[in-house]
Length: 251
Ligand code: 13P
Image (tube, rainbow, N blue to C red; front, side):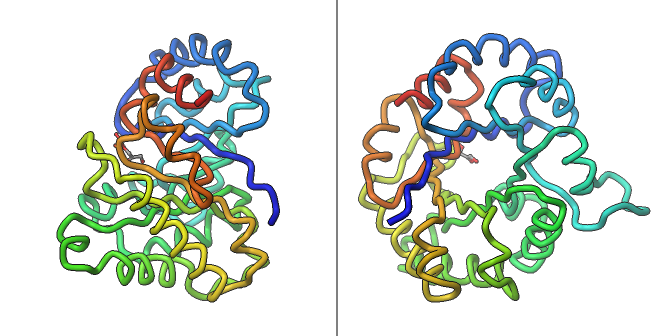
């Protein structure tokens, strides 16, 4: 089985100005200077990207954005293109986060267009999937994940998806303090990996990094990372504090 390098990513959501991001990075970088065996990514708001990129320059911490629009440029008021993100210093972009699906009308179809545009622009994609509490209670977890992955990656072939990462983020565990048990997370991750093997190839599935997201904290990261199909974490609230996020990175 190919080695999958752990990726610990911080999704700052709608927090931190550029100046606050710079303060954070100054505090954070020395704390993670020796974490070379794992990859770190932080995803600030659009307005903080360039300042954060400057502060991260020379470090191995990657910059990510939280969303993008699929067109390269044009009359699309309020939107940001893949090319703009790359020029701002982004290597990653998060796509299809449940908050975008819930509050901003993101669908599997729009997610698919965003994934394609991002990869074409040379950005690495963190594609988010996950079931709601109602869907889990109704026994629909796997069918929801199946649909989100299948439609989100519709009409791709394996060779186009080298730079894909999937994040499993059960909606009921986001910002609630209610982490999925490591068994629940592992079961979902293994399901996604098998699905990728069936849809694309066994080789792609074996190399694919699948992150867990939902109330990840310094106290629970180690037990999650001990599971065979959990290759990293997408951290919201706890990534806002450099000390806490560094402890998660160094689990
Ligand atoms: P929390 O870590 O705050 O639960 O958020 C998870 C998340 O949504 C990361 O994208």
